[in-house]
Length: 294
Image: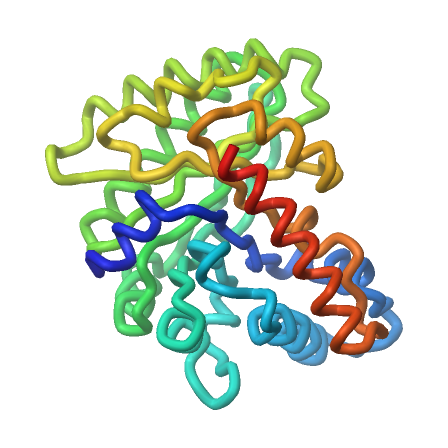
């Protein structure tokens, strides 16, 4: 583990940029960016365009290591270059932003009010490539729509895979997202907190994880997780809230920092001049960083 990166993640001021849209979510991300589906043909062109979008964000003067602690990358982004340097190398050695890799392969069908992760084939090989690329940690997402047995299954699976990631020398971000539209959102968040605390007790003395959780209905619901010695950092996902609402909710949850995707890139388009693009991105980063410090 890179101790300088670990210290920045654990104690730094700022937030984590989520730039990890993958196959299923990429067309929507490009459409929001002002590039409709009829503007490209096939996956190769689509991923070229989304890499251009991510490159524009990462190389912007506004995207700096003073306010951004880390960036979560899609596998294809890790495998590509930015200004002639591998993406993870550029992030850390040019921007001082810690590189993190999304490793899940998407969601299985809903069962018992939750969606587990699909099997992650070739995970050991992917983790080895991540280490070789200078990646610090990983991220993997599940979704919960109501409390119950499905929620427990999500947490069990997340911590099982986290053990494999820890063994590879990487720090996992465990992301059991509670759907913001769940009719039992607060109850699910209560059960989720208890389940995570139970699993944290099973980690080794020298092991830590990060958590990426939905902004809770009860303020400071995750305070026990924030203060837990086995938790390096608690991140909040925007989950479909607007940036304004996500930041307002985040500011009421002490010790939690943002890891926003759509809320970070809200308002950015391919048609903007570089000056306008940088101005809008800077305003977003300023707002999210301020909410993360509260």
